[in-house]
Image (cartoon, rainbow, N blue to C red):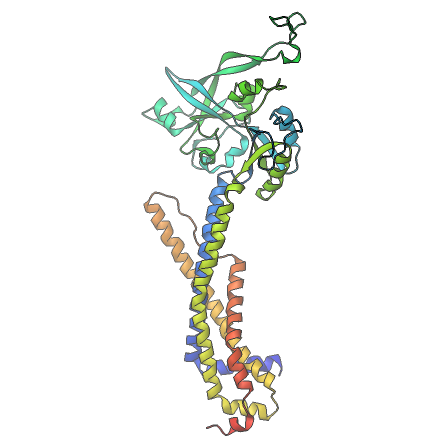
Length: 453
């Protein structure tokens, strides 16, 4: 039997029992809509979580710190002498040269006396890299971000801006702010006469250090933010005043790591408590993290903490798919019932087809075509119904969030691959459901079928 004839016969048979076939197709549509709505809800929630976490600037960032103990720790390897490797400028430059690394910035946060007009406050000052501009904390900031990587500018937390100018916090934008800090100034090279200690022993290479000088720097306030950058998960983000990281490095502001680093053997240069490594693509973060771990440093990224989150969404998608498939399973019973009744009603037609030369395989193909047509029609209708349900969910969620003074979010999302999978699944279920009626119709004896009244 040709494909055109098969399609024509299947279409005609479906049109003869419009109500019954329509109800069966509607059952398939409801099942597909239920399946699509539930799975799309899981996809939407997963995309929302990924969007929020990606906007926080954490997925593409790796925190690097020195080993605290000898031996292996999180994949890191210490030198053969057992001494942890020092996180200094040489190590920083080594990390910069790794593939897929965009930039490497130190974590800078220090206490400072901040003076605005005639008022002084002691607050924490944190450094921000230029890439922080894309962080979600700056989406609704008042004012602007830093004009350059080393600009003499500052961004304030809203709480501090209220303290500086209680009447009108935004009025501080464009005003001058003075910060006082401790500058780390290295000692000049020692002379041979100075290289001998009080007890007469030679200090040699151990004679190094730095002095601390009190400094002031005038900054222009450019913006005010309400939330902590990076969700407060970085030490530098938990501050009241933010300045460019490059500016903080140029000012040579003393850090707590300078004191601990100076006590280590061989730490004659600048050391870092931690470095934030930004990669070009979150998918490359694991490879970069492994490479840094082999250098002998401790690493941490949000990917380590999100393993459980991804597992949760996988299980959620599984259970949503199971519950959504129940309605489609019920619809498959309707397909079986419809086609079995069609076999009983069309016994004479089947007998005539077999009497004029139709094979058992041709009869099976006819019933499979009818089942597949109902599955296709039900799948398309179910996708349209599922989209209507999704639009209602997003609309209702938006209203609910707005009533709680929150921005609207998309919690239901149906990607093309999920739509195609839902329609394909409906067709497959329909074909499986039509297997028994098709085999029953193919086994009919043409003589007995023609005698059927």
